[in-house]
Length: 268
Ligand SMILES: [Zn+2]
Ligand SMILES: [Zn+2]
Image 1 (tube, helix red, strand yellow):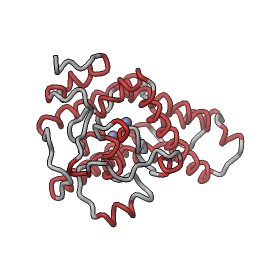
Image 2 (cartoon, rainbow, N blue to C red):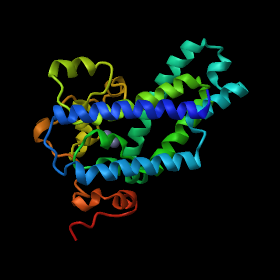
Image 3 (tube, rainbow, N blue to C red):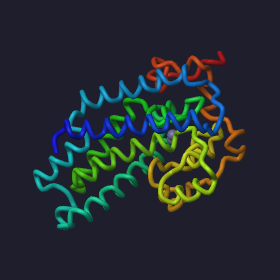
């Protein structure tokens, strides 16, 4: 598998899911937006472009490249255990998802990591573009962790590519501002984190922020008792974002990039 193939597959899947979720949000929105699209979308998409450029410049091989390197050099526990490719792929996918869950918990608990991650939480609305809004330093740390896991386990490249595509798609899906029938949410929530499940994580209330850490598979939150079914104030009534950085000018791209290094001065 050549790197351009990886980039094309990822870009195509991204464009398809982005368009689908954007149309769904317009046709069947869950909540009225507080800050709106025009203030947020240029910045949220801008930060995605910064992230993609940072990764392509600093870690151009990405996680798929690490998987190909591990395969070429016989690295990884899965290879030592001589697992069948299909089994190693499924196990590798699950391992990556668990690691991303654990990483998310750690980013909430360690103060300097929370400074990086809280920019994701400072969005005043949550829609599909919030699922793309991560600080480039968080993205680079996350990629380094994924590469370490891929090398240590020897996860097959096909599983790594599938994981990256699925994680990108589910992140846009579970941040989207779409109305889903309750019965459908309950059903989907057994296998994938739904928008109603992840929205609890974006509550301004800290105990709700510190729940529902899963981005993709919903099982880890149930297993490690970080699951919260509903927000206390209901989905229509809850306040999204953080108690700090509530000034709408904090939605600007330059402010997003500097938020980890600043205290909130909007009230001064
Ligand atoms: Zn979080
Ligand atoms: Zn989120």
